[in-house]
Image 1: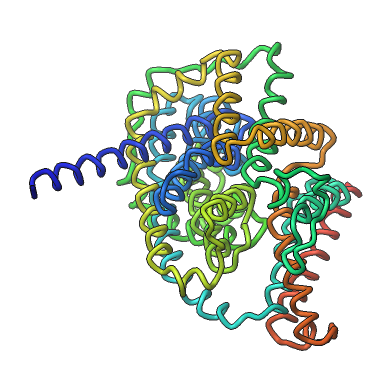
Image 2: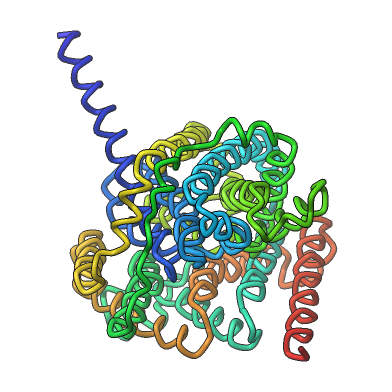
Length: 494
């Protein structure tokens, strides 16, 4: 009897490891496809997590997240094309290394730096998150409303060149958050007598439609364009993790990982800002700054350690405050909510086992990322040559089946397609889709806590401004807004 139980447990463990490795590999491959993002990688895998327990489901999504961020370095090194925004700074030195016959070394440094940066950010996440959550447990309706306003300022940061377009996209998401039964009164809003909308729009359909289907339509439009061929040279024979070299530069690795974690914890910053800031700091402290941009290994270490450390940093506000740090963590919040879990400070108090399970899953995701990239670099490079007219239909079918399987409702599939078209049009005209998802997730939180706060305070607005923590969040939101307005003005002036 004991033997059969042990065999069953071993089989389940092996199946979990195999699933984790497969998902991480898929994340790396999606991250390596130029033009895609870690948010899309997570969104594509979201449907398969619905039938899993929360820890397993979020663990798989974290594997895809870590894999996609790390996978963005492959085209950055070999093609001078960043696979994800966080790999922009990687091109500065990794591509010159590749053109000088050191592609293998550049890929090895990238893998090792990604792993070390991710593990450092995991340690910080585990230490800092419970402290922030303990403080946040004292929040009331006023604090949650102000925190939601601060979170909505992420929309301004993600707006891109046009602040107005970013705000419009965010308002679209907030409008979607009002569909369904009112959380306070129960009144039906914007359902148009459609039973499938009584509980609101399907978060999974929104995420998959906006991130995945819209990208498929973009790729379909460019299907006739010739793709850049990926050149694989003999230098890839040396593509294995250069952990010794990364650890030899431990001061640089630690500094850039801390920069990446800190930037990731700031809502709206993201991997591109983290890697560029870390690269700049590495150049400043280097004894040979003139080598940067010409194939300096330190530049690769700085960029890759910071953009992977950003992942752990972005999980801090997501888990402790329920605020997405950027697009991919907005999708992760969607994954938790689909499981019936509301991220935030109460999560640490009521489901501490789940939280620490997520911590362990994040550590394992980084280990799997190291293992998969170590053994799979050659395979991933060659898979990039698969014709898109084979990939695109398969991805769409995967999305449709996944969305349908949640509620067994074809309306969700139609909604996914409609929002995919909307996302395609938004991207075409420079609006972006991440602000829509953030507006959808935080819009309902802001509305509900505003109304509950007004009921608690007998209709008075003053407690929102006089309670210290609430006022601090509102001031920070104003600071972020003014900084974004200034940046937008300088960009337009230039």
